[in-house]
Figure 1 (cartoon, rainbow, N blue to C red):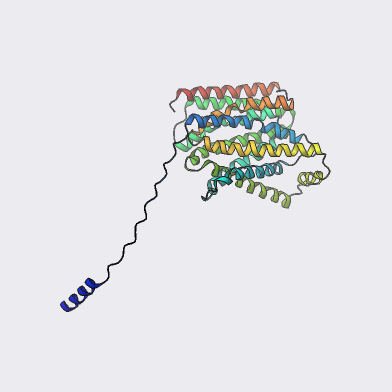
Figure 2 (cartoon, rainbow, N blue to C red):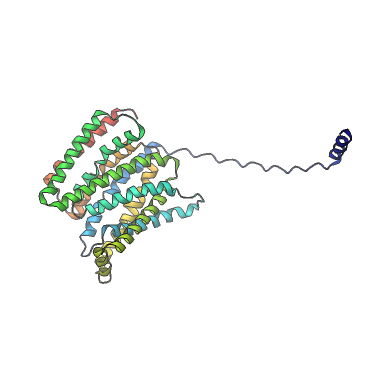
Length: 342
């Protein structure tokens, strides 16, 4: 055993010493830019209800055309515009990071269904009444957020919910007096409000860990996918008479009609869809769901102004009464949250 040890020791002594590769100097990690102040994010969020305020009048203007497209077809058209706009904005960055399709798919589903219900509901609900109905999100979001976070909901919030839904009952009562169709439209708008509420709560949970533009692109891509599947399913499983009639009317549509439809599609796609889903993703990174949704409560003001100025819609007594009750609940919730610690 000892001669073998000496032999291996001598071989090791005369073996060439392996050359060490020169160490590559470490690259300095760029400093993380400071986060955007909360005030700036709130300022961006404040522009969201202004853009949303133009959505209902634009949809009502489309339905006033001689041969309007079905809601799902109209949604598909402006989703494609939204995805193209976001892609054009993201192109100069040349980011190699994969898009967050899982988060975008979840959030996009909420938005797609909410937008679809709202578009269909607007066929029988006035723009200003629909705007007030959508604002039930102001009291739905705090309850949902409390359920998600496990925090107790204040008794005042439950009272505000009761007042808000009393206002909703007044608005829906107007539809019941005039027939079943307007009441069904009110119910669709309320379903849209619930889906929008879920979206706001989930967005506040997902946005802090994701890039705002990447998340917006993933959401827009998901909405396009859902809309394509919906149109294909309707065309394959139903007569889809409205869609076929709209497609046939395009060949003989007047230039003014085509221009009005194209304007509505581009506006809704670029402004009310692409911009707002980015602004929400950006703004809610540093703002809670409840507080962000409170910022959105100014939408009825802008919707009513646009509806009156562009469509000459005069609010009815039921709209004023029901909307007033909803705004009272919203104002009470705002005051309660201002008194509570952030």
